[in-house]
Image 1: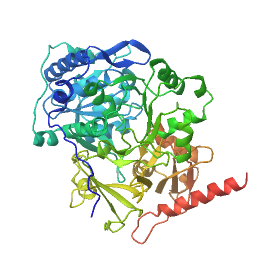
Image 2: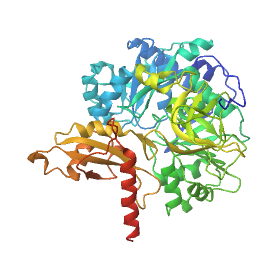
Image 3: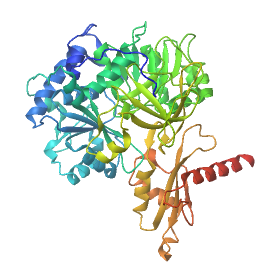
Image 4: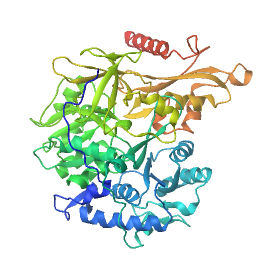
Length: 547
């Protein structure tokens, strides 16, 4: 038994670009993307269409063929969505990467996505070039995303050179099979084993995501949204790159999140819809500067990418004007972003993640993969429907492990469905991902790096919560030193430095490093991380008791 979709909604079968531009129901000359720091720097639908057609011609002239992957390393910009759509329009596949990644991480991402072309801001050129060389990508296939007017590095071309080859139409189709089978993007999901995997999102995935989230129960106000979450992140990709031009949603783009600029932008542009992650919610609640700015224009705040405590949700609501909605959503990269939410005009104060989107079937299974047929019983949530990805790129093992025989994707999140309200609640997660400022950190990735240290022979990484740090988790490493004299001097500072040189800043071991004689394991050799979590909790509780 499973919880069958309670509602059905027709999903178009066009290609992403035709779906975006062929039926515009708003003024195509009005600005859609607006630079938060310079409102005169904007892009309308008509301007976007021309830029994208020029990118199609330019990318093809540069040698891009159907199915080639282009990787973009950049902070947010109003032209980021243009590149996203231009790559797809030319028949290519988009892959975004975190601009803070080290060469170690970039090499893995580029190899895993099998990118053939790279576009990068000049500040990130050094690690990108190192990774490109390792991945046999010639410098002639690297463009500079010089959107801030930076000086071009010698020997490199600006991405704007791609706009100098005339215009060509995008790849068009209008049938369900092609729409479902044609990959538009390879977005990275941390997973629970090994290094990050490339999730394949099809044209149909993106169109389904927008249709079921934004067109099923449309709101009664004109959308004006702030985009401050990173545009490479699955939590932002649909709402940043596909929704604005499809529906005419004015989107004010912040290069990156900074609290005061974020609040000032909401006030200045009279933002109506705000999508945030829990760390931003907590920053808004705790900061002394929040009362200095008006949030009177806000009609809806949506929190996702990680759970927000019910108390924090209530305190966030108190910052908003009367009648504003403040709800949580649930989803993941493998579900094209959102899978459950509260559609307008429903609100919530219980910490729920709402109701499944139309067209989605859900089921709950126990530890033995047996269906749980009752309400109010916890188990792993599995999802089937049009937002579920085709699978992980070039990773048959992960695909076999992630989907069951009925086509349900195993989310790894532990949930229950309330018998009275029929709302869904996420209470835990089977996966061992650590949520750091809404980014996913996979312990196996950190463990792989730590085990490459010559003086470490065994390791386990868990997430811990620290006193005074809110609901955020912090990666902590338990390390066993190699039993040789040279290892005696290894300390926490050295281990953190070693990881810091190889991993992005948000993957830092902010939860600390503990040196132990052995890592607890069961008879089959599986690490008993539950034991480590209990020890960490006891340590934290003991620290509180001393205060």
